[in-house]
Amino acid sequence: MRHGSIPGSSGRVRPMTLLGDPVLHGPCEDVTDFGPELSRLIEDMFATMYAADGVGLAANQIGVPQRVFVYDCPDDEDRRHLGHVVNPRLVAADGDTVRGPEGCLSLPGLEAQTPRFDRAVIEGLDRRGEPVRIEGTGWFARCLQHEHDHLEGAVYPDRLGSWRRGRVLRAARRARWAAPPR
Image (cartoon, rainbow, N blue to C red):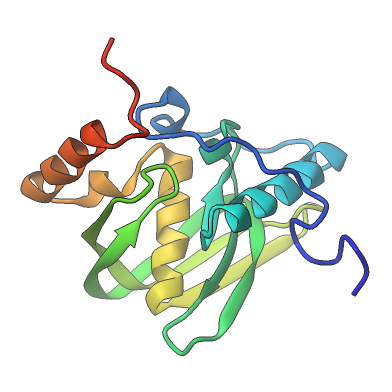
């Protein structure tokens, strides 16, 4: 395989944005320039996601408030889904609501049973501005919904009931990566 044909192989690993950083808690801007900077961002996102052992990464998780996410995630049948989407819209989230373990690269080491729909459909664009439609079920549907939430300014604890949310946020405050109180 040619160097550069593996997503992220020509990218650089960027620092991860952690819970509490304002870029994670506000909606991201639509991408309007589909040039080389977008391709570089996507490559860097793949490199960063792989370095962190993730299955998905939104641009604001590396401090870039643009509507882009990448993924390399299996579904419940262990089929691999690999790609990216620019300016995604969640056009369907339905089926059974399943509570399952969910973590986040921006909350390292933390996890909570988070409710998500068992099916999700995302429509958006690829790095060239061509339309894409991604449909996922099971674990992959969870990934699509999680990454889309990031671009809307939400993190998975926002989906939890008050007791579970409080538990995750208390653990985040005690985590070694937490920012010191001001």
